[in-house]
Length: 158
Image (cartoon, rainbow, N blue to C red; front, side):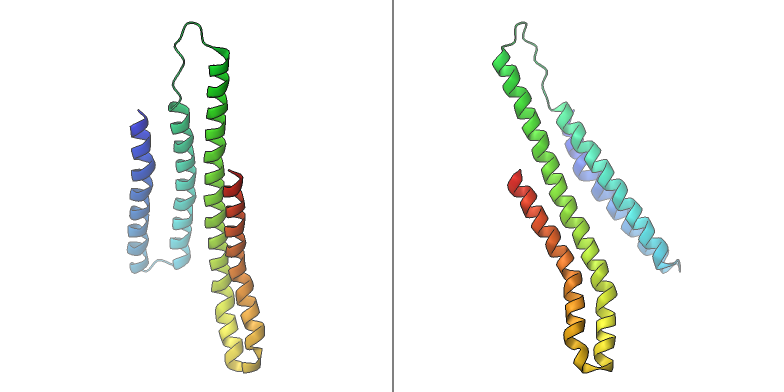
C-alpha cells in the first residue's frame, strides 16, 4: 500500500503540472488574459502543495508497522515512538525548508519583476540614478537569499 502512496507522491503532481502548463499555453494562445492564466497556475500550485503534504503524512502514517507481540517490551515501544516522532519532525522540517525556499524565491521574483523595469527606465532617463536603482533591485533579490538562509537554518536544526 505504501508503494502506491510513493508512486502517487511522485507521478500525480508531475502529471498535474504538465496538464496545467498545457492548458495555460493553450488558453494563452486562444487570447485569454495572462492574469487568468497566472491565477490558474497559482491555484494549481497551491492545490499540489496541499496534496503532496497530505500524501506525505499518509505515507508516514501507513509506514508504521503495528506491534503484534502479546507482551511488548516497554523500552522497545518507547524507542519506536521516539523514532516515529523524530522521523515526522524531520519530514516537517524538510517540508518547511522547501516551502521557505520556494515562497521566498517566488517573492524575490515578483519584487525583481516590478523593480528591474523601473530601475532600467530611471537609469535611461538619468544615468546618475544607476546606484540607487541597483540598490532597489538588490533588495528584491535579497528576499530570496533570506529564504535560503532560513532554509539552511531549518535544515541544520533537523
